[in-house]
Length: 476
Ligand code: GLN
Image (tube, rainbow, N blue to C red; front, top):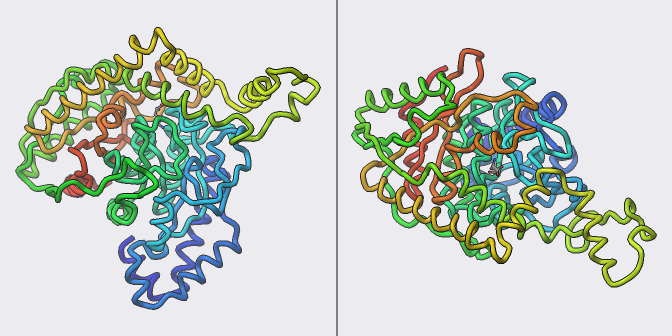
């Protein structure tokens, strides 16, 4: 993409050609795989392109992502199109502002072409719970693309150069692995969450998909940094080392021999370690004992925070009020009329998985249960974070598979929430610890389905992850 960006700066026709080609791919991704919820209209796009074309040569050079087509997960706000979170509760919801990350990418020259499909409110690992219907995997349309950022992963796989997702427990890396593209979840605090609809605020992070890791780096740089509208944002703490041969690469004792890991995935992991070894790295075993509790800790934290964050969707502050369905007559009069209005809105507007999480999350936070569930989960979370810190005293990077298996069949895990939650067992530890992690495409299994391998690094080591990925890049 680097050369294409340079050519787009010199030639307006090239700029139009590249952006319209991406829009065509997006259209195909929408029609054939249901990967988009909305696409930008031609007139708005033309205006944006004229604006870019009119810049001086100097201004164009300063825009590192000049003309790069960008698709945005539909739980991230962009003024040009509604933000639905794939929930009928927010159908047609128009924001008056754009998320900081999208705004910064646009300032760097990126061109938004559409909003992508997701699991409702980003709750899921298969992109089947969207009120806009399930997304299909382009490698096998009978299989899921992964979730919750399935639409953005599919769009990237089909040729939209840069797409945004959100990753609370794996929602960028897991679909990246299932669709055969790169997926980066940055350090907690590296990217602003302003304009990302909150799910679990202590873990949410906007992440990036691309087939070309160079673009991930450019986009990360353009989007990073302190934002006064998100108090958790930080400048990079130190000028971290990039990747060097001779570094120590760790593999996790607790993940090795894990039941339920597909043999092709386990074999891919062995291969990754031997490629690192060939690149002059030292391979070491590391241990994070408490990681075995990470899915339980993740789910408790996620549902507790979600139950609180989603209380704003009541049909008054946000959301389509379901008056027309309940009707004033049904709501009746009396002091609890307002409560009945909330209940009608939320009862009709939210899907089953969202309701399940709100109810369980409310339970986990209730007086009498808080200590046993939420508080305890936070204590184990602290242990996991500390154990990672200790591990990074010994190794420079940790490698593990992104997912236990390749893409599963549509419908296969829908009736079994626990099986679905376990699809993230290798990705959620990085969210609990706030660490950056990258999923890299790593060949295919015997059925031709993509395999993803994951690199996890210390805080703010994204550049190291991307350089390491380039050093072990697999052809084909
Ligand atoms: N699949 C996980 C969940 O269901 C993670 C979702 C996410 O990262 N947004 O919560």
